[in-house]
Image 1 (cartoon, rainbow, N blue to C red):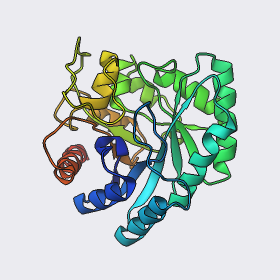
Image 2 (image 1 turned 45 degrees about the horizontal axis):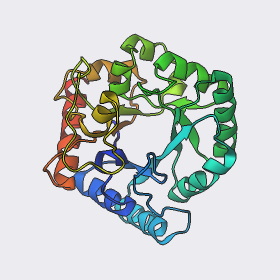
Image 3 (image 1 turned 90 degrees about the vertical axis):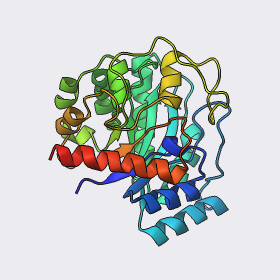
Image 4 (image 1 turned 135 degrees about the vertical axis):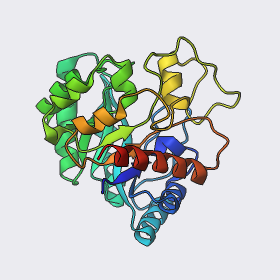
Length: 277
């Protein structure tokens, strides 16, 4: 059976220990944990290696049998240096993580590749492999560009159907990838056409600011549950290596409790996978 995980961005209001407990109760196989805040204003959970919250997260992982697959989040910009990732990698190693999610925020392709290669060298020493995610509103926005950079740096990819759709990539771009570049797929859904405008909720989620672009707003608060939109998710899953783990990343304003929303997403993914076996 394909393993399915819960990305922290789906329920960012939960602390890492709470996320583990909720994911286990919902029936997920693994989690992704935010050990580093990704945006200004986002809550920085005290997840340094050896901290009380880190130890509590490990305890709950041991009690539930879940594991941490990926940690996040690191944007690789022009000034990113080893000092920016050392503590993050140590926090991930304490949780047993196998990947770290990164984005390419540096428009200088050569410098970005060198930075990612340096990160990869340090991360692999801890059993962690960086996964470069093409983001539709970042300098590295397409699957092809991300693949070229990741391959040169010894890293892998993190593919998200929202950014594939909005960044102008295709399922054929995914099919063309070296299977070793795709250790996991994220899943969410949405309309094929990007919205012209989106109204922000009265109470902004953690890390969301009122000046974000339409694509940023959609990515942070308006994704749809897999199977409830128009993205070609079945084709995306089929284009990846067979059995590739699936990680649910569906940040959305909802009145459901965290456990209810987690269960709804897992049920949707299981139905999607079962219908196309």
